[in-house]
Length: 273
Image (cartoon, rainbow, N blue to C red; front, side, top):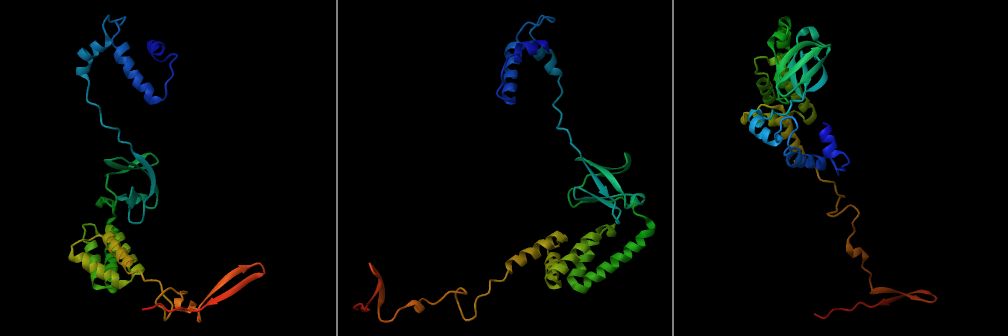
């Protein structure tokens, strides 16, 4: 370090970090690497190329930087981490947990103690361990599913079928949020448009509430009403016919004279045909 400090950067001035790094590489290859080392009596650059470089391992991949968040265990026994859902055992229902998420795993902790580990899911995904769901509540959940399907079917036949397709899952009670969102679209856009969108989506075999929402939004944009116009007028509300400004008997010209203004009327002339 004394040699680097005294021979390389002592007394030097660098424009910025990039300039210092470039000059350090040049110094290592032309000065420090080519000198005769006091201990080895050899040139460091030649020793590196001959003995050390063949033993180097490949450069490792960039470090997988994790993210840390604090999440709540909701009534469906799931927490939300980076817009994906992960199940948690019943004992932590309603509690807050610490979540550590990297590119491979999501780990949940309660005051430093591990609670659950799941494989990382993409946004909108779900990882559910059936063992986290209490067996005594499955019956209640199934009754809630039947009620949801009946509620959806009341708004339209295709809406009811779409709700059934959404809940067609080995763990159907974990898909209840999607049906709630579908019912929210019914409240926002009305049963008719949602039923038509569900029919189109079923014909294409696309079961995703996000697609239904996109279809309804685009249909709403195309159906925006035009601004109302005044009754009996084909132009703007305050527009007047140009003929109302015509003057009978000729044009009037205003002339500035020392005593004030004087008006001169000229007779209209006909343009010969």
